[in-house]
Image 1 (cartoon, rainbow, N blue to C red):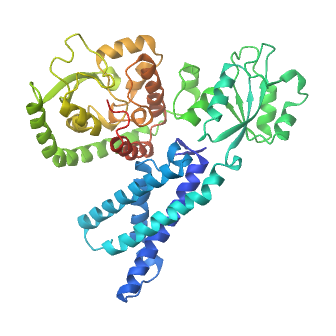
Image 2 (image 1 turned 30 degrees about the vertical axis):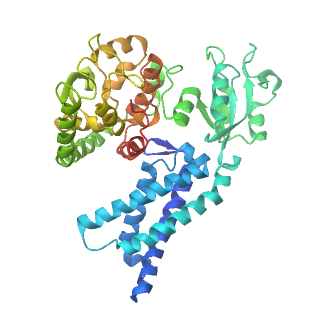
Image 3 (image 1 turned 135 degrees about the vertical axis):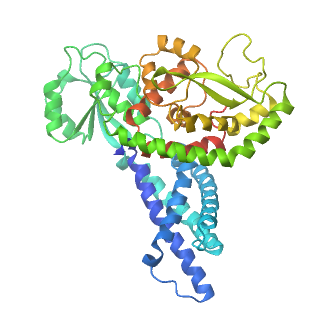
Length: 461
């Protein structure tokens, strides 16, 4: 993996994205030259239209990220990838037409966009046909040696078995005399020179997966391996990098303190984030006002009660605030007390079910963003009753309140909606990753991929 602005990106995904970017440039240039030859004008050099080409490639690539073209399913299935590519290219063309209308100047002619769109689809699909096998080959997967043969090692083996995994485990070394969970593990006592063993296996990374470090941490071995240029990683950091979440089962306060994250440069990032929130929320409130008004009327016609409802939520530093949403449930939804929403929840109204699927009920929360109580991106704010209970059962739950809550977040795009303690634990692991590794780049990535969640109703309930 490559760490890009504090966020881990798989080598294969980054390589595929760079190739796609180059192909989009070529497709845009081809579309322009084809149209220029048809109407008999000089096409000029590529540099003369660099900003138009860059605009085409940038918007198209953003649309591809947004609809999940670089997700695990798209990397595994050619049919899935082609379907997502068609959606992405179509959305990109609509976006380019809107940009041309907004700024004028006829930068993106409709005829040129048609040619560029057709050539983009062909080139991107061919790229996946050719590169698919290569990106899935072991040459693009890091060779990992696991020091440990217990439950943690078994978790790593399960992680490596995923088709989208970016690493392959080439061996296990049982560092203690206890009975191993991994049957094929080699005992440390039979390996004369562990450093030589690492070199013979052509290992690129060693992961320490000991169940108990006390009196068993192989410092001499790790130091020698490290000095040969092989990367040495601990279990918690490895899991964070490979899964995009903080593993609550193995993490401890010292790891959170000494591992990379929570940087001092966040003050600048927070200022940029707040400026974006103010600008975007102001524009969105103006543009969405007719939609909010329309659905407010539909809510009134669909069921008795007010169109909007207010609810207490826990925000930054554990302070309570009121969130405003379009009502999607009946007015008697919580007569028995606060409770999580369930799958096919009978309390949800007919119009409410549609609003939840396309996230229209969330639009009034933009007012909370403008006031500064929320941000567009951040952990979803929970109700005080749930927070009190979850803090008793989940370690580090209070730490998620060290960042401002958001309308969408890292947990929302990576984990389906859940209403159990285990679901809350899984979402907390993603929230802690966001709080630890927040940058504007990660915010942009989350905002783009939220479109994927809305388009395919992933996680709505």
